[in-house]
Image (cartoon, rainbow, N blue to C red):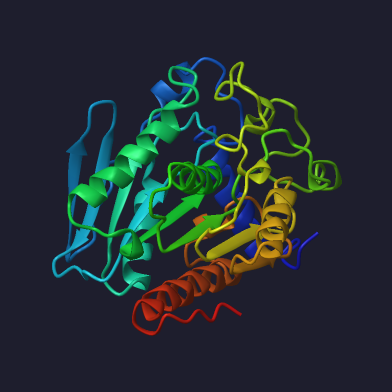
Length: 314
């Protein structure tokens, strides 16, 4: 158990997990898409000093959060979580606000990409590629684009990088991955070791990580589905954050190890006792505050590299 057992902080954590995951059914399998269609959230309140634009694409929409005086040094392409069956929800709009603030006024583009079961693989990847292309078409060079993603979105960010690399296209400047889902084969030891610890996915087989709605009949070792099985050669620097109690802990550890072995700059931060995408706590608990500060430092490093051509991740 983590350090907040039977304390007010523990109750905050449990309430957060219940509200974010159980009420929105993120931790459970959405068997036919009908449950997701019934979900409703209040309209997200755009922070003062910002505007939110909805950009329609052929198969999906994107949301662009911009400060009144946006920085032109960087833009963040945020790929939301939800196990490839959940759509863009308010917590990721709040993430966009934090990314913007920590990036000193950068804009954040959040695609509401297509999801299963209606649109299985490769729909999400296609929409991620289309979003990247939209940024390029609107004047953003790859060295000023940072990918950010949580859970499935973190895996999708890596899959997008692999696709771009395979197409011999320029890669983005960096990746921020929070509890990335990188191994849909569930081969890592944490799927067993943390089964009874995981507050989100543990103690049940009726969970997103056990379904195949997104994968369908595809091979789960396809690197565009499970980036762990691809090559990270040539990847940009990555910040990977993960909770120590997660069943998906191995997804982060194995990717970090594999990428480091071939020379990729990787910072892996394991937050002991924390649950899946604990950054959803925003600024409510110390670990989440620390994680977001770490994100800010990583964005500073990426921006500094534009001027010095030198990375310092450690």
